[in-house]
Length: 112
Image (cartoon, rainbow, N blue to C red; front, side, top):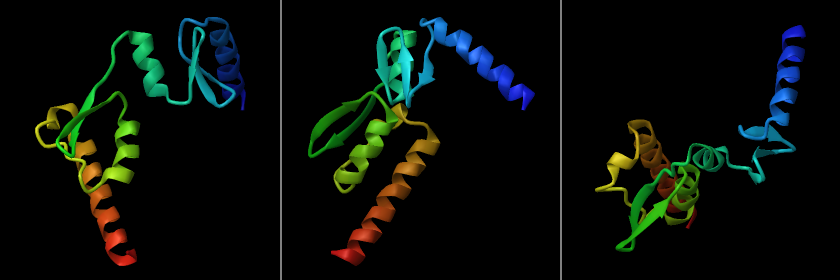
């Protein structure tokens, strides 16, 4: 319990230094920016945006967080294709997307 108290004291000090990301009131905060998505805030913090590409109905789509890819996968699972953009993803993300697609296809095959 003592260790947790020490961690909370450190966190309170960090909150006073608004130049690093911190979590408060269910959102991440950096300077005057706030977001519920830490990945977006970290991109602002380091000044570098990530990009994930995929094709959808012959259009190239660019997303800045993997969470956005996951959201798109839930509604575009049939047509979302990362072929040609595999370098944007690590092996674990690729496997995860494949499994999500398979599960969605199984679900809709049974329920439509």
